[in-house]
Length: 388
Image (cartoon, rainbow, N blue to C red):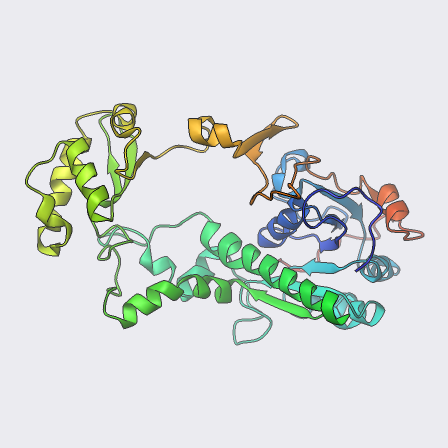
């Protein structure tokens, strides 16, 4: 592993990562590595990709540094290869074959640095009939069966933002793969390519459900199972003020406490009797509509009934438990999740706000000892490919 000249913060201190700029799961994966202490250099392109918001507010680029390289300029690939030569990890999210055509594919990079771990983030993967097709989170989760599990049985599948596919099935699996390959590279001196496809990771997330399906303990339809909203004591209910409470009273003793605090009698036997679930659901719904969300929150406070208020994004940071743990933090005027998970010996920190495109070129050139790493004037608009 190369030795970084920057201070170490977190368990990945000293690890150098090159991120070829994209959108969605690639930047989030790189943010997670940066949160854990890696020195992440994001290679932005002139007028490059973004979320359509002010770069100063793009939290997924926090704890990183940025340089600008026009990969379609004559000297563009050489600049990236110079970084790759000094890096431990490179992450890219182009469609299959694009990085190769630009001269920064795995072969080019690992010819300069055999120890390099080359992480590839796509929706469909590097091979297969759909590999070259465009796509987004919703299509990837749809084909894996995961999307079809979510939502009311009488309506269409519910869209879980892009958390399930892009970030859970994509970013997190890319990070796991990169760290596993980095461990192997340290032991052997040889890097490798990590093909992280969102369809693979999302399918992998359904492993327990497939086991339950094989055992006959899961029905292959929405809203009919213990964990998909089909169970009346595992779901959400509207309160008198139009807000919601979440109920997860699965175990018998938690269920008994739930009934007691809700004020329902005569339903203890409904826990294991699915024929009584419709009646139980109606009674639970009627009870929750008699009080506001905050009143029910106070009622269940301090109990093991496994009931919680459904909070909005702006409300969540102010919840007493999350506030006590500093689960959210304010940095540079932005309220955002703090780095996770937590480490006893090498705590991760939020060191810097979102990297401004090209703002760190001189510092990176000095710290990584990459001569001539300057931002060239763009010769033309360069948009290699849609990420994923």
